[in-house]
View 1 (spheres, one colour):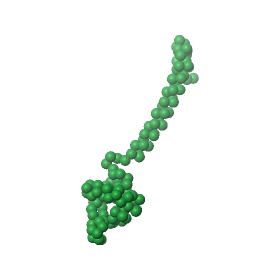
View 2: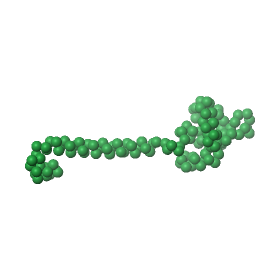
View 3: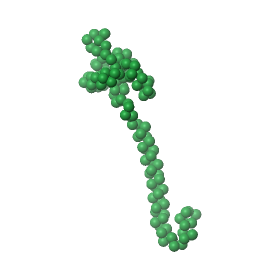
View 4: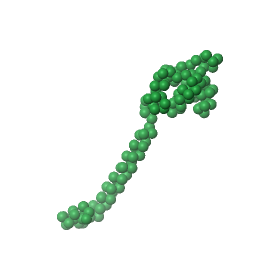
Length: 129
């Protein structure tokens, strides 16, 4: 026996509200299901959102490449990451200003970049290495 049947049995005057009660009961169950689905979807989306403290995914790829390559110039980074040289140069300027990479001209005229400790700590804290 459902709670609606019990209510009507206890208060016969409520019998004319049976359809309304059943409709509200179904709607409530449906809303609870939808709420659970939306909560799960929100949790899933939250797990995908990058923390405001995280760098752009392309920048993280660049840092990882430089870490593995030791020294890399703009051309090498551009080819390896499928980015334009202009985009790589822009990221390099930001990373240099952020004290994450440093340049070296030991290999010739073109600057080669390597990670500073701050970048390595970032990659470690972000779980990327």
